[in-house]
Image 1 (cartoon, rainbow, N blue to C red):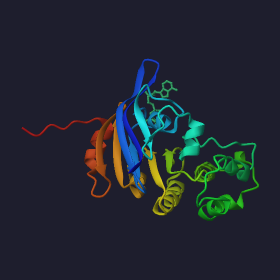
Image 2 (cartoon, helix red, strand yellow):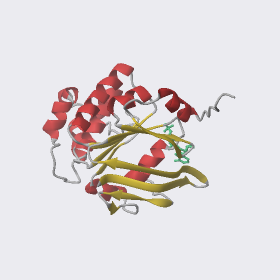
Image 3 (cartoon, rainbow, N blue to C red):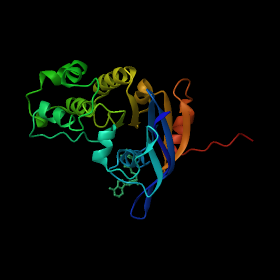
Image 4 (cartoon, protein in one colour):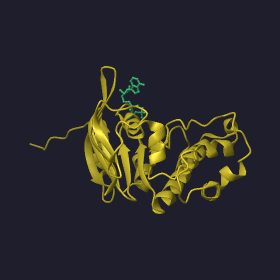
Length: 238
Ligand SMILES: Nc1ncnc2c1ncn2[C@@H]1O[C@H](COP(=O)(O)OP(=O)(O)OP(=O)(O)O)[C@@H](O)[C@H]1O
């Protein structure tokens, strides 16, 4: 059975249809990368899956149970954890206090503070520092650790790479790969195809709120992805 299954999702901001009939599935242990340019609808799709912006139509199933109308805080308890775009770390709280906020759903599982610190040793070293003094990469590691402490069935990651140096992004995706290799099901939203391919089993490309390409990551035709990303249609030569 799929851990997460969305069918025909439509999400609006007023008159704007930001997600236009998107369906997706995530099997247990699988990592799906949702790709697309700015404004393609990726973050809005994640918001509909996490419950922070309910869809106007369509459905979301978690382990086969409908959660479409379940509010975000209860979806976390059911096992959907979001690492939001921009990280949302509390600058006045310590790193450890930020992490511990992720524990509130009280879900059992392998992720506790020690496991997070083992995954991110730099975060462990800074556990007593205020969140506001961390670099962007360290904040991103804390945001991922906080989501892991919810022991999610599915981890939703929104643009891990945003505003970070390539070497830092590579380190973070190495950690994500270890997390998913240990069995966590994940959906990764990215603009950077190369980084996404470091962790993804499958990719799904959005353009204008619609799915324009779905493919396994192995043997992916990069030109086809680039075309889908930018909405280029190549006719056959005449
Ligand atoms: N809070 C909002 N109010 C109104 N329109 C919004 C809001 N958030 C996003 N949009 C619009 O919805 C569409 C999809 O935006 P979304 O942020 O989901 O795209 P994205 O693929 O995540 O892009 P980005 O990488 O820039 O975050 C865009 O046209 C965007 O301008």
